[in-house]
Image (cartoon, rainbow, N blue to C red; front, side):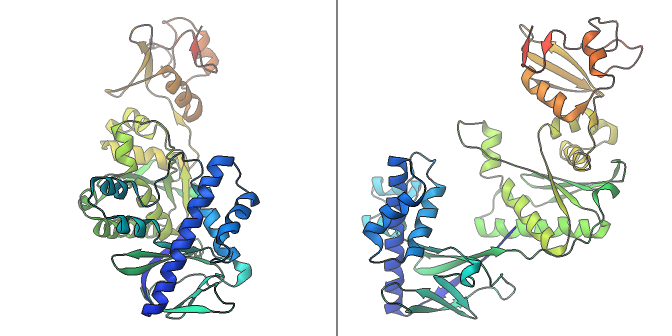
Length: 422
């Protein structure tokens, strides 16, 4: 887990011009490294050798290495607009001058931390001073006055520093590893707290040692859907404080969703909302960061089908909303409990293109391939799989059926391993 602090640094006018020059040169080196990677496919020392030819007169080897590292993170993106896509469109429309556009492209100076170099080799923090290494002369450092929140603490043995020019000021972002506090909560086998993040808050569900529901509540922050970035970030952090404080009060670990947002084609309006306005990742990161500092154990689970299973099994059983039902499944999954299938499944649609899942007056449809993955990875059948699939008769208990009852329709003739019929 990483700890991030934002602050402001002030330089004398002559020193400020020198810092701005270093920003311009390193940003140019980053663009050069990116273009070389895209053109040749190299990502190793060949890139550094290429950049050094044109930039070692203004940068030292460490600045060049950091520029290549930034470029390497973007090498798989076919078209990167350095300076921002919105600013580029404003430039084309005449809303942004060429000078302003160039300033946006050349407004960052970055230095990576290194434990072998006693913290950071190029940008160092000494009390309320920030020192920037100037390669023009050996041993020359540009000194600025640093202002950061008093409560911020970082690992002095290794920290990253990024200087950025914004609104006529030089802002600084300092990143370091969080010193984890000793774990204070009980182990997961004593129960857990499932967390389901949503656009307006977080659903919390506490379970006992058997995975049964003990308590549920919803921590709501309506403003995070509409507020500006600063207010939204504050509300997300306050939400994380309440979640972690509740975990400490019941002395149980937190179980969070392990989210991975891949690139590629559009995944629909819901996915796009989660990825941008929803701030799903920011919520989870804030909870993790707070938990590490307070000594609350955090476990992550695959979030696939938690909402579907919760809807079919627990919404009506415990009179929960869909968010609390999903959080209950997340908590049980974190405890290693494999859900028993208590709902029926039946083919529907032309040619059996959909699987209809029904349980406790709730229904949901899935494609056969998705149902196959859900069934094999996250469910255990009510009866053995061999009996359910080999029965071949509607008079036998199908998947999710009970002895003596007629199945609502098991999937017959479907090859689960290949994901096809036949």
